[in-house]
Image 1 (cartoon, rainbow, N blue to C red):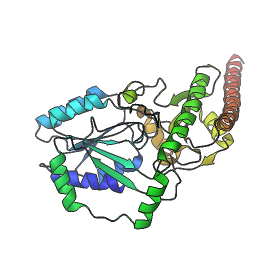
Image 2 (image 1 turned 60 degrees about the vertical axis):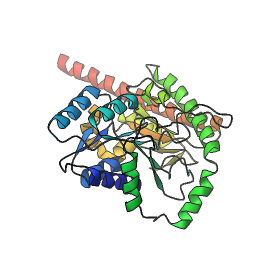
Image 3 (image 1 turned 30 degrees about the vertical axis):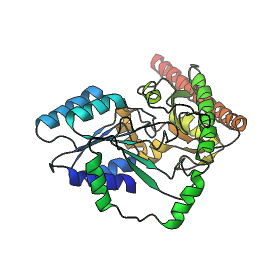
Image 4 (image 1 turned 180 degrees about the vertical axis):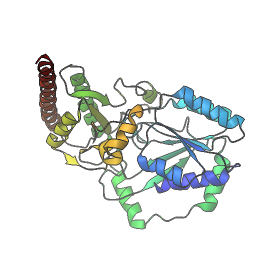
Length: 350
């Protein structure tokens, strides 16, 4: 978040018009939105990442009225719904309308995706998969040397940058990063295995699972865009789709049953060496706020999962058990609803 805050502040200083806004496309990590709102000159939020017509219309209106936006921020893919922006389209708009394209690729990760063909600035949480062991925090900013704005950025950052990373944190990050590719290969494989199975389950009408949010599944804004910027495989590493996915359930009851019976660690971190689960939307936004954001795809009946390094067969067994319990809860919920309908009908007859 320090990386995001400092980039945002530097872009604010470079802006020629104090009325210019920033834009976020797609639901992002909630603190990113708070920082851009609290410490800037205005923010326009497009929670529905597929609303490209509305986005372009807003960008052109602001430009025509003499206040072109400062920057457009997006995650690749997004947290927690794994939405993937069409960065080729955003790059074309940035070149035409003169804004800075900032991409947070924390979820995708350096090893899996390459943002430099399109982004002016790349921000990343090194706390996550890069470090993995949840024992140190850090963030990074990468300025794209191919960007037309690079010279201005570099000059300004050289003047403003303060070396405040604690030396022991730097040592821990360096040490942890030595296993980055090895860990990422296992995490990519585990996450793909689980989401393939879960997605297959969701296609059964009797399943409690409504949606599986992962770059490989057929939900809006996911398929296609991610692969465009995947790195090419090498002898040492084959890129994948990252550690994070979310499950959407057909009812709150089945989501609770799944969460209570999913025997992994529960917590808000992601990218750790152990699998973590969280009722993210419910915890972060609360039930009422989540409902207000329903047009963004968020729901309190969603569970976010960060996949770790456990044995793949054991992980699948753990998830199969939790899904079985969720299916049982959904079946009871449906039966209860059917009985309620029957009773109401009988009451009307009497």
